[in-house]
Image 1 (cartoon, helix red, strand yellow):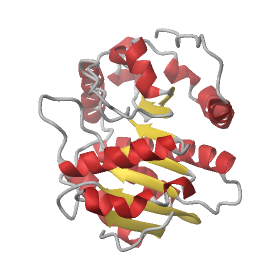
Image 2: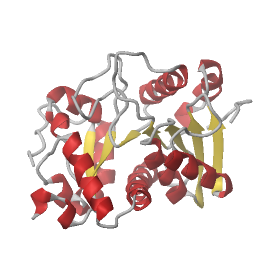
Image 3: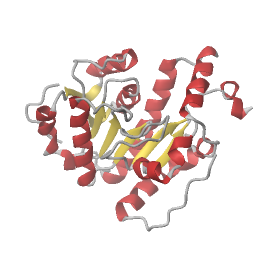
Length: 273
């Protein structure tokens, strides 16, 4: 990927159409993780509000938000490694990450930290109007990336800056989307629109896209979808499936779904005891 002058449960619904070659390759790449995390995927779906309650109780039991974010980032990194290795075993292509400024951005940024092992170039683009993410935990992860091995940080505040990344999108092993931003009555801000444009373009040239905690444009509380939402090839969710993700419309945006454990103790989940 080049940059020229940029600034810084219900059972899963069975598929009724044949897998494309790309989908089949992705399914093979993530199969070991699907097996490893099968117990979480099989848990009964809950509402987004119930999931927040589970996490709040876990916090009262001593599981910090930082520990949850680190576990979530490690899970996303595992998926990205598997997909990148299948697409580019020689490790010549970078992993590209698009991050927003809200709380959910921390999952992608923690994934970038977990991937910074020196074996592959990691390009992180913050789609925001400020120099750092606005949410404190995401800002902390962004700051730690400054000294991470083989990590390049950039900022995309507008469409002009995003243009610097478009030409090299086909040279990306995998894209991690951590933009956040559920549907609302207001249109997304310009930096998010720039990120969405890059995400859409990446998918159009065949780059596998992994959504952290679900893709942008899909509201986990209501299941509402923003028109034109680009969707993802793989969505990494955490602890339990969500009820709003069970509809056919949601599944089209989610792509392949993996539900990763993040260390939630059974005592924090009333449905587990």
